[in-house]
Length: 167
Image (cartoon, rainbow, N blue to C red):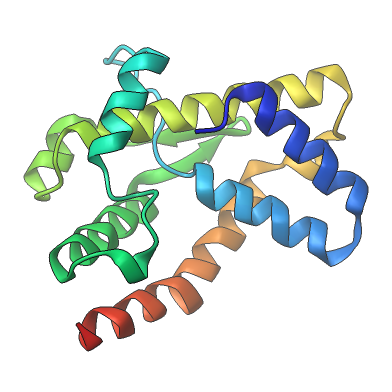
């Protein structure tokens, strides 16, 4: 998984490429990183714990390699995130706790993975803006998130549903 410094370099490279491809690539990076944020009542897991938990998830596996049950879970996770992730002060936030994941039938460790990924994204965006490496206008997470939600609804979710129906 990418570390914060790697993400910063990817943001800088994509920014320097310019044009529409830069915007698409920033959205793609946002999609890859979209997952969870610090819920105020919970501690964040360590990088080592995150790496171990990530091995148990289906998030990094291409959709075409997932079983029907795994793809159903992936759709459920992304639907859940689209419902409960929001942006506040240019930071990704999650409006529910671990219990909501379990209640929805999503394994609780996904909450920790998502929370960790959002923390890393928020820190990277803040560092890039503060260092001046990337103008703040290019890291407006609310704009990227709105575009991600539209892309998920119009492109990614229908593609996953079609794939699910073919399994």
